[in-house]
Image (cartoon, rainbow, N blue to C red):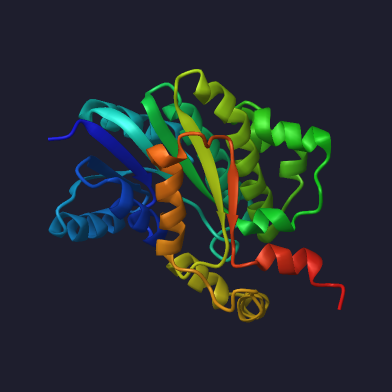
Length: 272
């Protein structure tokens, strides 16, 4: 049995698609705040020949994340971490979004930084929504990248936000900045960390947005994408596989925008 361990935080469609590409012949952990979701996906993967373990984990809770790290470390050498856990603007308040999407991501990166095996790679799934923010100040940018994890939620410009969409966008921008800053530290241990900022990908989370209070906005975005359609989890997984493989060994501290041209249209389709 392989001693290589792959940890997927969040057992949704994107996480499972990535797992199918990077966890063959390895020990796979599905961690989810809803253990029943992880167990359901685990059974499907076991039927396909994967060696899967499940654990309940709330990424916004340090004790819960510590248990995940301990569980993974006892199974073998942790060579891969993928964080897909997160909430959308239609699913939670601004406060809860910051706790899960911003603090939770930073906490996972902190907690796994020193237990990843040399040559290992971590990946955070962010969002193209981060690219819709007006430019941050240098002080805000630096704060999102470097503020100690336990102080992130106390930043004045974070506490001032009470709109869930703004909280989501700031959180995802923070994810990309955090990854860039962490890549320097991770490199000292021979490991890599990157981010994928995904567009509208057909998942339950995206369906919540397409049918939520901002549905007209999202449906209009979807119908006007330069590529003419939304994306699939497999298309995110294709990129993730490259980034996390030996073929992507020169890639770290990077944020990859894969959104069907949504960001390009948002900023630059104004000249006609």
